[in-house]
Amino acid sequence: MHSMKARWITLSLLACALTNAQIVDRRNIKSGDIIPDEGYSDQPYIVKTADGAWLCVITTGPGLEGAGGQHVVTRRSTDRGKTWSQAVDVEPSNGPEASYAVLLKVPYGRIYVFYNHNTDNLRQVIGDKPAYKDGWVRRVDSLGHFVFKFSDDHGRSWSAKRYDILQRDFEIDLKNPYEGTIKFFWNVGRAFSHGGAGYVPLHKVGGFGEGFFTSSEGVLLRSRNMLTERDPSQLEWETWPEGEVGLRTPAGGGPIAEEQSFSVLSDGSFFCVYRTIDGHSAFSYSRDAGRSWEPPQYMRYADGRLMKHPRAANFAWRAENGKFLYWFHNHGGRFIREHPRRRTIAYEDRNPVWLVGGVEADSPRGKIIRWSQPEIVLYDDDPLIRMSYPDLVEEGGKYYFTETQKDVARVHEIDAALLHGLWSQFDAKATPAKAGLLVNLPAAGASTPTEVAAPALPLLLQRSRRADFAADDLRAGFSIDVWMRFESGQTLLDNRGPDGKGFALRTSTVGSVELILNDGQTENRWTSDPGMLATSKTHHIVAIVDGGPKIITFVIDGKLNDGGDARQFGWGRFSPNLRGANGGNLLRIGNPVQRLRLYNRALRTSEAIANFKSPIL
Image 1: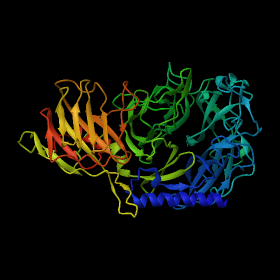
Image 2: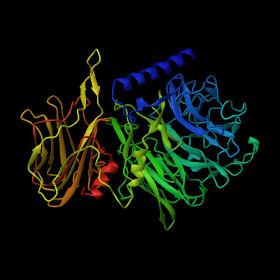
Image 3: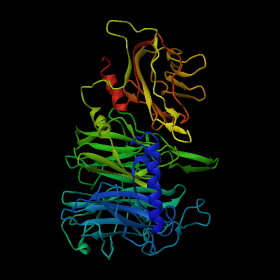
Image 4: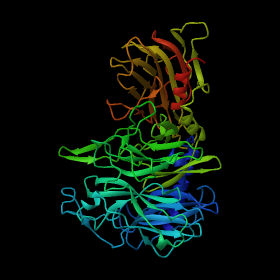
């Protein structure tokens, strides 16, 4: 216990040192508050107890994910995640593996915790060859019994007895190596209540092999009497949807459909979104409270474009204001090839996290959700760090997310303005961004000049005043906003001096624009998606240089570039060593440019869209 406490204190001090030495960006996960763990930490989910505390359940243990000693604990916080109580074991670390827990509070205050439990203490099960050369899988945290315990003292203690939930056999169970006598499954996200019943998500697995889970689908465990019955042995359970097939990928999709996340709409419809290996997440609606589901589709923005997402958790929540938030990663990762004859399903690139806002709309079938375009909500400076398995908590008009890197879990307060900006993308009226405006051309009644004095752009990196004179990351940025008539091979903007320092924005021959950034030592380039710009047509282009996550984005004609069919990523990283993009004394403006705005900060996607909708200041 002392080593665990020391580790937590060390991580907390490190986070404080980093944020004190450098500019604080609340999107940087190191600015969050740490949820203590035992080494491994997964799925930090929170419910607000009847006595006003936050109760967090977490899967933890001394080893890596799936190792022995993995178990479920809870902690309480009465200061919105700043500090936490000592851990309370739901299951001990010296018992069979207990993992992947979710919470549900019922109306009279009892809290249930649902989780995997390797009750039979199986040490191996049959796996797929050639992924497992001897045919045996020895990771045993995603099988066995699905169980629950309960707390009647707001999470300070848990029932001594655990209770099994019997899940109905589906086709995927009967096809596993044990024909359903041993079930493979796990759980993430949120349990919820609706119409007097309690619902718990479950992700059924067909087998273990390459990518660990080789097939999967989602179901709901429904208890009609859970919200009122106080004798846990008398709870009644059904497995929905009806039939023998759960929520799978759309027609023609792959075998992976897992980590289903459910939201209830205002008309009682259920919305469910889940991950695949198809480069896009999938979703479906139920109009009969989970008994049946509409044919699954891939997620789309309100403008009809497909959203891109790898094999990673992607959750949606209904906020207290009746609107929705959706967490995903905004790129089309499908797999990586580590060997010419071997395909490994990718779980990579979960950094940064992007957030989308949703609003309800009417359809002939019932309510649906229209989704905005995304913003970066969380990131880490190390591009290979992965963050996932979030939860949303609202308290006093503020918004908080939890997340985990698998060895550190944190709570983050999110700028409410970012969220309201997402929801406001659907407003009919749009107001152009004014904060940070350096250049606004042409002046009323004038034509666009061919050159102006180059404004001073923010530095991105500078020498600190510390004793070691190391670099301070200023986490600054800037944005270029132009209306232009597209012609290929044209320079739109250029402030570079004879030494090449500065920035340039120019058109290509494939219907795109390229941004060049140079500080005399480091040069970076990123292009917009090809084919979005048509010759002799007027287009609106916003190039955003965001010095927090070190990412360049393009918003063209009100659409954030996501790579489309041409590439996995529509956004690109620039070097953390880039000091800035100031160049010569003049900013040269090409003939195609009809209007120019230059900002000394990174605009949000929502602001770039508003500028497109209202081009005149």
